Image (cartoon, rainbow, N blue to C red; front, top):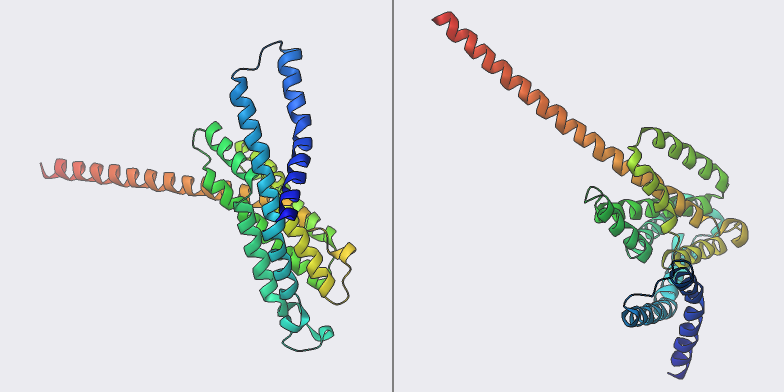
Length: 280
């Protein structure tokens, strides 16, 4: 119990130190540059305390519960005794790690959906766009991108293929998509890749990569264990732009169908009018 209280106090102090520069800059510009008093100072101080306290409880909760569980599951799923069913580690093939790919996909999707920075960006995007960009649609697109990136990243670690091949291929896709995606969504798609590398996602992704690299025969934790975060920043750009492209395609299809229906109706009306004139 005392250890938990001490950890909470230390984390609270460290969080306060981390947040202090942000507060100093904002107060400095408000008072020193704009030369205006801080409105609703009491509410601001109370809210700031809640922010620091919430971050403290969040970080301690992750370290005490979520991180150990994620790391333990990752190590067990990549253990040759589980993967190979008793076979020798050097006889395992990349197809034997299907549970690892599935776990990586699921944990990538779940952690991204719960990512606070992504929630904040999605809500702001919905507000600024007037509802044209749905918060849930954006979150699901980003989460699917991170999930896909972790599945591909674990495949890379298992097979031992170089990371740069995936990065080059991925950014080629991004460049091509950028040319054909609605311009209003491109900056948001690029930012979506950055918001995934935050408090919740990074530690779990790092634990997964290091755990996998340390149990797969012939893999180096330093060389192969890292790189999942880079992929997690890349794939959401692809999925968000793909989400926008699918939406644009569906809109065009509906418009074309409506125009065709209108033309058919006008044609039937014209045919009926001609027939009536001939019978007269």
